[in-house]
Image 1 (cartoon, rainbow over the protein chains, first blue to last red):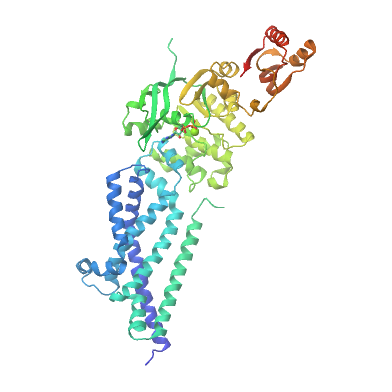
Image 2 (image 1 turned 45 degrees about the vertical axis):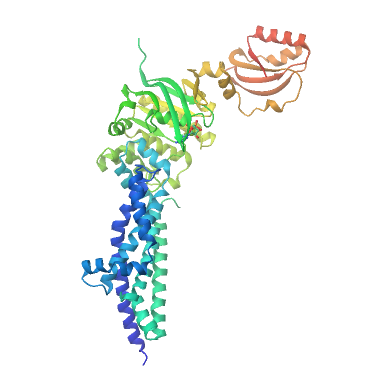
Length: 222
Length: 335
Ligand SMILES: Nc1ncnc2c1ncn2[C@@H]1O[C@H](COP(=O)(O)OP(=O)(O)O)[C@@H](O)[C@H]1O
Ligand SMILES: [Mg+2]
């Protein structure tokens, strides 16, 4: 027996809300970790404003390790941690934990590359005015990298969104979960198709909005 | 009486070491800069000018030697003390180095924020400074919408925000067209006179030095070759390196294939505007070739230099040299 249009829409709506919930909470949490780590990576780099080889290589190592574990494996591997934090390993709240663990190092690298784009001359000028490292980070690096950081955020959020869909394999909730349960397990291709189309649509939307918002915030143009 | 020097550099050396190789960029530099003067440092690209100026505010730490700014031994300060000391040393750059995501006004506010000035007070001060550099109407513009000259004016206002005693200017007109260069140099001179701020001008352009500097140092491959008043050094350079630098403007005498001797005449303003070359040609009935000339007439006096190709006849050359001696024109033979 196939589902009515109304039933599919209802499913889709609940899936969409779950997906947005997972994505937004995970992105926010991952930025809380990833932004300072990315800044630290830039600042302690050998060409950074406060080079520190030991710190830079150790953080870099952890980031690389986490980045190289496939998400689907991470999803399973962190289940004990997830259970400890959320109390369960299924549902969208449980998915937030592996999402944050996967996304934070990714975001750290995005932030690092954005901040590295900041003109060295401006940093030099700040030094010449007697700025401290913290002042340079807060008043120069982050504000000057803002357009690039925003663009990075749009890319990060869409990446996290697609990761969240993958979590459907372990009952993670959201659009991906529905697509897998109905489409893959029960052979209801129409349901799967609707979920995928909606996923594609939100990715497009986030990306387009991110690009627009980044340009709007860039004072180097116009 | 002891001179009042605002900057003193003693036996300064700077060596960069990267990947096991080390290059000495500054070799035994000694310079004293007087309070309130406009001091020029000229040299070719790669001579070490930027490194030298960066050693003055310790953006670059000298490998050896001492740097004093306003009596304070910069080389002996801790990082924290240095940050404070740098507030009385303004710096301006070739590429302006403005914050691109801040308006002109907020750029000028930046150094004031760094010292913890209240926002309202900082904005007031910044407005005054923008007025000083003639940019009151551009307060709310972002640097991307300003011309090169306007950007440099913002940078100057920013450098002046903390009332520095010294302004370090590293090639600040090199990215500007001649007209804009003029106006920026005039502004600097004005600020020097009005505020009494000592200005150190780094450049590879002689015109910049001629226009605003009282004294000049010539730097050539890590060494200071000559220091003196602009007049002394530019009219009568003593060292080979200085001559090479000062006379290298756009001339290509090596392409010149005549066989006669090449003679360089230097006009230092002591001769009047009598047509000396023409008189010489008439007097000796010879043909001399003007291989190169860069002279200008200021108040009826001739400045600059000129390269003549002399006839091959030795006797005639003797007579010509005698004539030049009589006229009081200094000359040297070109290799
Ligand atoms: N941080 C650095 N590391 C290694 N070499 C440097 C560094 N900074 C400058 N140099 C070298 O020092 C020399 C002088 O540079 P610089 O002071 O910038 O010269 P200028 O300003 O006169 O063009 C150049 O050969 C340059 O390559
Ligand atoms: Mg330079």
